Length: 571
Image (spheres, rainbow, N blue to C red):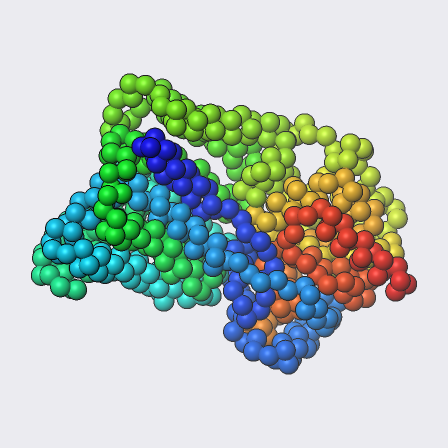
């Protein structure tokens, strides 16, 4: 029974750490929660959008200020294109699982039976013990949710939106997670001042409701060395999603996972006997979390590298570090790697063996990616395949790349092509300027597929790896459409002075390509998430309802075919 319980707890830990960064579904809407993959919102403020009439007025003003073909269209998004966001639920579940991970850390797990026994003996009756345990759990929830609300108050929703692609914040997040990871590996402990813990402990002796609250606050403070890195990772992930209540919801899930067990064991004290005893396995959980923190930190560093075109953190570099971390984690699990604070491992348990097999299998799975394998299971975390310096993978569909001959169109030089070399797709002829794409559409007599995308968009990478790589989808993209890729988080591409304008939607001056594309998506389609796909004709008319991320190949083929059919019927 103890072995089973330990296996379940360890499984919750691993699942929680993985889900903390997993990408969620796309397609967001104005006046609603912003999706987890919202990539560029630094210069878009959605509060002015109050009614459809106001939105239309904004579109007209934008078109007057920036009289280009891109801003001259006033198509609205059909209702069927909108989907209900799932951001808050995902963050709550991530917080919940993160809380379960924290529960089995060395700073909290041994306190579980001690705290329950304290309430049982001090209260004198089971009913009073249950009441005090409930109050203790509620106090934990209040403290952590208050922390999440403070993050929102200090930053605000607009500032939280900007975190996703801001270079300084992403670098800070990267360094923060590295520090958390090193702390979990045992180099040092992150602790709050001992005077604070002593003061709270003194107040907890007062008794009554206030005493129980301060007792909960004492737990929060003394367990910070274990919970701090998990909380920090959760808040970083939640804040970077741009959702106003995300930090508070994340803390609600985290605190519930900590609070509920105290109440359950107070109701059923006999269950405490079934818990596995404290020991070296608690520290092993901490070390494995440290390796996971280091692995996830690389995503934030990759975000900065892509958005600011540093061009040194390529896909194979990313994978090499992940493979090295996977090997070290596997060696640690089988006892071949030991840190100074680890206890001796006399034998390998069945549970530890299975976790080691899983880690080594995942590590071996990543190795072919060094030579260009798509690695669809983790494609959302990796830099684009175009950053790969050495790629042995075959062309999609197994045939030769068939690019549109330059002689078939009048445009000989693509605008901004040099900025997006690292985002190119095999066998596809991408365009990056709206006006040029409309001209090419008119000359080739093909509809335009607008792909609102971003450098820091996990769902975009997943769509490209899982859906666009399908031979039937790829053939349609290659032969039937003019592909227009509009990166909403491009930071380096400055617009000429005569193309710069002030957005009516946000009131801010649009000076670069990313801001222009982001403003266009928000003002024309009331959407600010990526990926977002729109099919238009050479006049800019929307042909079919746009859609966001949907990983069904069949659905995407129907979407493309319906757009092509609508284009042909309109000719």
